Length: 95
Image (tube, rainbow, N blue to C red; front, side):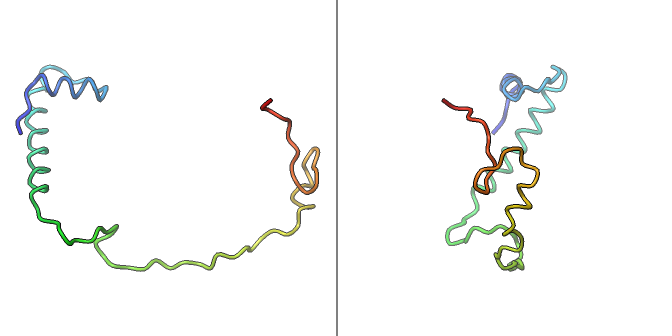
């Protein structure tokens, strides 16, 4: 696919990028090459290929999901200006 100057100017406008008129032709060529490369990738048969997040099959180490801290609401609320039943009391903001 070949892009012309006006198309590149419109793309630059939509992307809010200021491109000088002198650079439009070279940018059109570069963007056309990128689009051609993407079209080549679209031609690759990917049927039966499982999507993956990495090229290497690996399992990440994971920790046990356990509570390691807490159980002392009095210490947590020690600096609260007006705690109520082990919770922070805040002013109502929606009527």
